[in-house]
Amino acid sequence: MSEFFDMGGYAAFVWPAYGIVLLVLGVLALRSVQHLRRAERELAALQALNPRRRRSRQGKGG
Amino acid sequence: MTVFWAVVRRDLLLAFRQGGGAGMAVTFFVVTVTLFPLGVGPEPNVLARIGSGVVWVSALLAALLSLDRLFQADLEDGGLDLLSLSPEPLEIIVLAKCLAHWLSTGLPLIAVAPLLGLLMGMPGAGIGGLVLAMLLGTPALSLIGAVGAGLTAGVRRGGVLLSLLVLPLYIPILIFGVSAVEAAATGLTARPHLLILAAMSLFTAVLAPLAAAAAVRLALE
Amino acid sequence: MHRFANPTRFLRIANAVLPWCVSLTAVLFVLGLGWGLFFSPPDYQQGETVRIMYVHVPAAWMGLFIYGVMAVASAVGLIWRHPLAELTAKAAAPIGAAFTFLSLVTGSLWGKPMWGTWWVWDARLTSMLILLFLYIGYIFLWDAFDDPQRAAKAAAILALVGSVNLPIIKFSVDWWNTLHQPASVVTMQGPKIDSAILWPLIVMALAFKAFFVSVLLVRIKAELAERKLRIMRLNQVARENSRLGAAQAGAES
Picture (cartoon, rainbow over the protein chains, first blue to last red):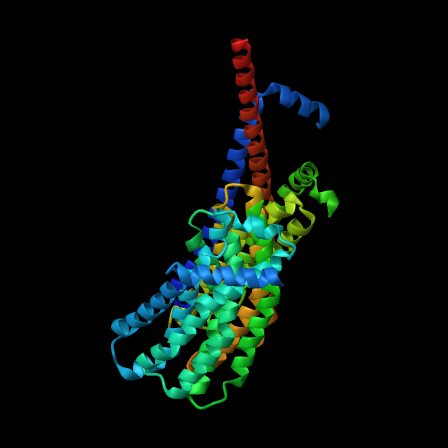
């Protein structure tokens, strides 16, 4: 097992490479989802303020 | 076509009269090149080795300097609205402004380039190659720059953004410009490099006005 | 094409597809990472460092591929004025920049043990660095405008100019590199790719592609919500202004 983590002596290069890929992609995905959640939350709050508009939307779509 | 030459004439008058454009770009060019011996040391071998690159990079930066006013000034005083109403297509007017920019910035840079080549200890053949390469390559700098200038016209901090957008696009001109000089300096033929530079200038002369005019139309909306 | 241009229809399709995309991404990531890290053999020349290739090469592919997606979406947005295409280009840019950045960092981590230095001015590394600059300029241009419609058009023009220039830049950098190539640098055209290495590579590439589609859908949804929010806020301000105006008129009469 320690042989596996040692990566033939190249652990200092292989693991950081995988680490940074997962880190950057993870942060990107997380921030994208947060952005979507925030926008949807604000949208819902604004639509609650304007019931007239919301009703017309519900009548049309669904 | 008369509109074309009228625009060229007017921009040239403005560039040379206001003590702005042309003189400042040339001074910037000279000062930037002067910084390099101070930075890397006065060793003649080193300076001769990096001379062509230093002069070309400084020329790219100097060409950028006056670009942010290319459309911005006309946008602010409404001149661009008038030009867009003229019967000539906007592409032709953009091309005229590029020509004026090259005449007022590119040509003065080329005029002082041999002097800077001497200061950097470049050989005579290399200096000849430098002037030829700049003559063929700098029109592309004005043309590509016009696209960036159109895109950033009417934008906050447009000047910095312009440099960010345009400098990566200047890279091919830099590479072939420097290699033409190096070929000439080492006694090889610079012809292929010069031909590629000319091709790039012609290519951008066709495509850049289209993109720049689209960007200017956007700024006028 | 036109069927997907309608935002509500797009949202319906995106919402149906998204869970599948996310699951597919997760499965492919587990499969690719497991295969690349555990089950693929070390290279006889490069040893264990060859495992960096499984993230490095697909990241570089994605960096280029996403620029292509951006350019096509920009062209569609510019010519047919599809707002959805404009938002696709905007949403794709940060993902492409992230993959380009990752290809540079992992390339550097691979270069250190193989070439003995973190960075060489190799043609491919240099081209990818310039590609990253193009992405960053594009993202900055979007942010520079207050009006999203003007930003969309300006960014689209830039993306198209960039896509025309990219092959020229690539050509000149390759040419520059062969001119200045130091003799000591080992090129990466080592042994022919063995199927034991090829499979984890393909799986990782598919994992990255699925990740791109998932995050792209999320980002487009966010942009659509953002756009709707903007319109609603403008409407609300207009409504309040007219109410104030009416009240004022009533008080005056």
